[in-house]
Image (cartoon, rainbow, N blue to C red; front, side, top):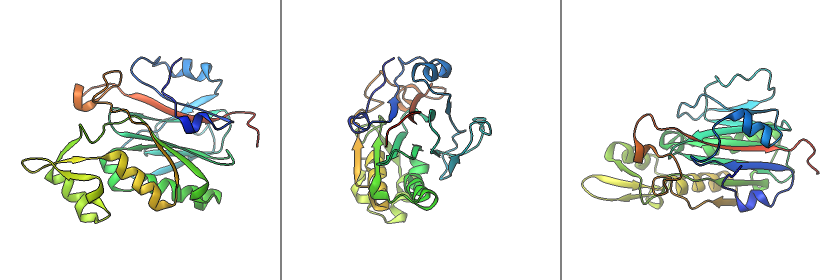
Length: 231
């Protein structure tokens, strides 16, 4: 079963992960079986800044609203679904906690990635410098044009928006969501960050809302701690 892999995460023993494209089996049960996971937990994504902790598989029904999941459970995957938005996977250097983040423009504006890092620090006592973060395939600067309405919201925050928001034409702008999230992670104290350079709109192996329109399917990005991870 082929998934796009992160070089950084692939080098860390004790975890499994993957960024799916449109060719990956859509049956979650098959993916769980393939990676020997008891479950892959997901949220009802609502483009928020809400981060939830998964403490029990039995109490999770995939209907909770939020856009980032954090867990320390073994053999349980956590996942987000995207079709141009930014998927972010995180793990600490002790392989004791993982996170999966969905960063659309609204979530990015609301600092969903930073919120996730801060929650991991406050709830698990893990310094952000101990985290590895991977920003997965998503729409890139080359293809993500936004209007003045969206651009003005990022400008108003005044947080280095000139680094990832660029004038285009006729009151249009190009927005580099991957870079915006990377900068947010760095601001939160994360230094080990990998960005997978695949644009989901350019590459038709991936589902893309901008290319295919409303009703497009989504691809899964997941991470899990192995049951018998060595520490």
